[in-house]
Length: 495
Image (tube, rainbow, N blue to C red; front, side, top):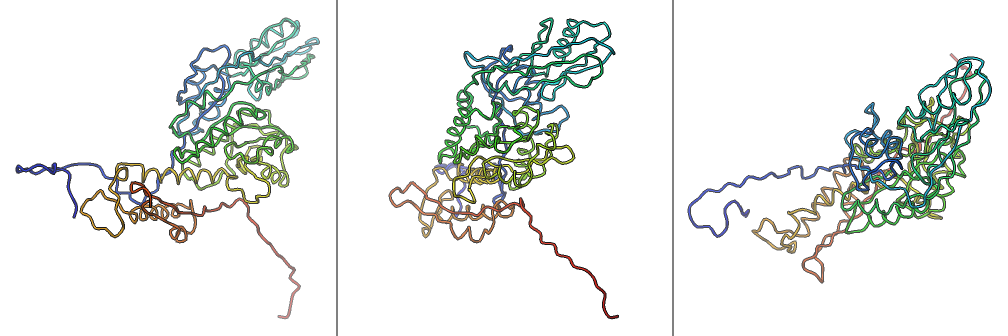
């Protein structure tokens, strides 16, 4: 018999009470985990900004807050480009890092020489970000050309460097300090035949990356499902900090696992997996690549995460193959990995890409997890971790609520008129319904077998404890398609 709570149970005077409340009648519906992206990186050294995390909805806002051309801003340009071809409505929160004490910037220079024989327009390119054009004209001195170059570089606020006029050369200094700034690449492009040559010294000397611990400490109970790491891929101190933090997010009392993405542009597979292959039990960190590209590693990571997060948000069990990471500049054809190289990369804990018609396409997206001797590592594929995220999210929706929290707990065979009372078989029904909808959405396979594993019981030592256990089989993905094609010849025959 159902009990209404519209009128207090102790009331005796005549009254009709009608209680109105919303009840979610989508009992069996699965709700996909709303993905959230965190970006951990530095602002510009010359900018003054708070180290407190903040959500932004445009790259312009990020640049205004942390400095244009800073790692945070460059990542935002990939996640939230002005064209709108980014993460859409997925929230992006920025966790600013200050330059480490005693850290230094990377410094390089460009030295023009020769005599101008024809007026020519040039640009300075820094990791595929172009300066404004500058023109060398007949009669220009080296000092005048240097001044024009300096003005052109500083005219584009998105440039990751600051240009300084040193009379005989242009000095370029990274807008942030640390080892990650040594990944900057400077060249003079577009023009030729002017009689002027440009000698370039690439930016070097960046020292000491900031620690990421202060940023991670701000995450709290918010479920940041994917993190873009703006530090360089060789910073194993940062990777270890992410791994330690991420392992804690798998804890039973937290149950909010995440993945951290770092970029890598090494052309050689052996070089690219130097760090990942040594981190065989790291299920938190994932390396996203673009072999031979002159994009900054953080740009490679941010742009691919824009695609990965969008798919994970809208169709969690789908893998990320053939997602076009537009805006990235592919490396030379000779630097691209063939199938054996990509297979080596995945087995060494690195993700892969394929370049088609000059566009970087995401291929395998994996974590660094690959224990020795384990041919099917449980935490290898990022899509399977996204499956885990969604199952945990839906379990929490069903059991972390007023309906279950504190409800009277009675044996399966006991009758009751208390509508809030719960029995183990009620929990069994909830889990069984969840298994069905997970299967309907292709997150798991064989729901019948999964339902046979459900165990729900009142704890033998604690009457206020309900124990639930079950096992599911994740569905696979069509990452490999094997086709045998046979043919023969027609020799004719009797009519």
